[in-house]
Length: 289
Image 1: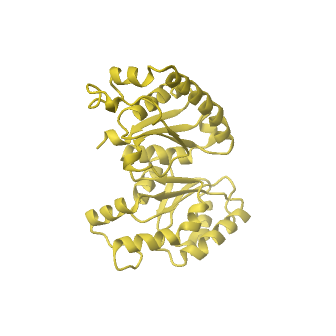
Image 2: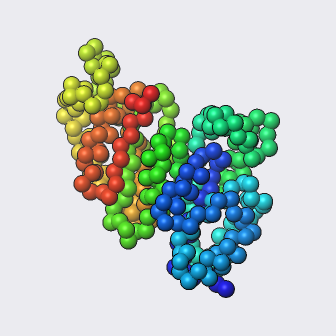
Image 3: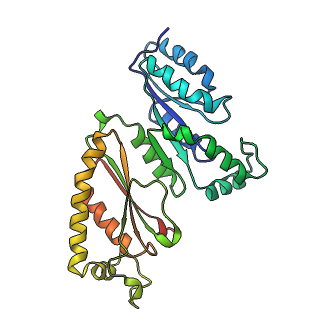
């Protein structure tokens, strides 16, 4: 029996410890029938059974990972076979920094599914194994710095049908270069050229939420001109991202320490975009430390 082309199939995959279980739970909350760790060889039989429910199961989320025998070799052929049945799944790939993954396995005392003399070695092997699968993803979510609420928003944005929204979900992240780049950015803007409150005695310990810091960062005409140009550029880009089928865009704003200039500009961009988009979130990474 063939599966009807109206089937809404989401495949969740990615690195072990990156949050696949949480993502599957969120998809189940969205009305998806969730199946964890389904062997790839059984995918077609599983979808045939779903087709026999006469539409009662039309939204399906399947978690696939390296525990499935022949994962790397079978994944692409599975997608090709699904395409012959007019099924085009959305693929969510979850990842995180190696440092965070090591900590997560240490905290849970779980054994990594990939063989290796250390957890770090196992993570490296799994990352290499999944490199080709990652390239096939329709949405890549880096969970390194995400809260559970933010992960839920990212998963929701990744599966929303374009008919459910007229605009993108937008995530704005302020950060400091001294602590490294966020991994999952679509756009990155460096604002280290703006006036730096760090060198002003009464502003150094304040943040980009402080009125004095905001006035200092923006007191030069070129700073205000920059933001006008930035907002215009983002306004120009977003419709084109949507035309390409993206359901969310992550914008990074970086300064040296991530506490002053990047926070000011990220907040301004948030207030500029809030009336224009279905979902806009701002996250100040280095204010959380």
